[in-house]
Length: 233
Image (tube, rainbow, N blue to C red):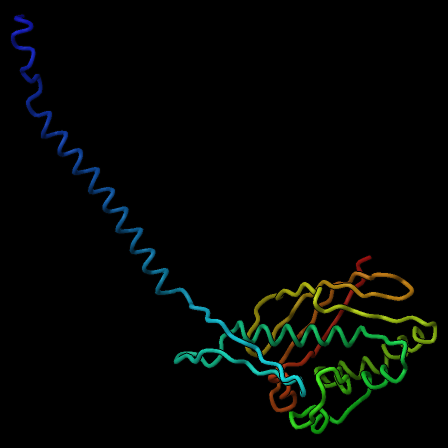
């Protein structure tokens, strides 16, 4: 050994080339991962749906709903807009179904059976806070008949006892149950009834919304076909 004379002589002359090869291999792997990531991101961007803002306009005088949104070549109406209209129908239905006023005349106006072709048409102009036929015009015939014969007598006995019911639809928690389409769907609602005798009554309700544009034009065709509710507390 002649240390330190040959100390700077490389023991492995191929070392630098091996290091370069390793660097290139690592760089190739990193580049491959980046390409895969970019391809996935591009695929996600192509497949994803764009949701544009929309406005639901309510006429102050008639209470009629209109949906204002951007036009699209591939779709006439975006689901979010239809969801909002369905949720509004559900909210108004529950508010009217669980409403008991101390004024018998107000109850009579809300609970009355009307003529759908006349009283529920777009031409039947009423003030937004006018409850005339409000429940009938968003309820199916069979369900409303059940309300008149099974529910109203119970409500009338509550009125006789001096009880009133009020429900705040702004406090509802509404969520879909299963698939919601432009023809309707089932909604689950958590809400609270304010009773003048029993206090606050928590409820959970299930509402089935369907669509018939010719019979229910004021709500873009949506109405409540079936309904059930349960008292929680």
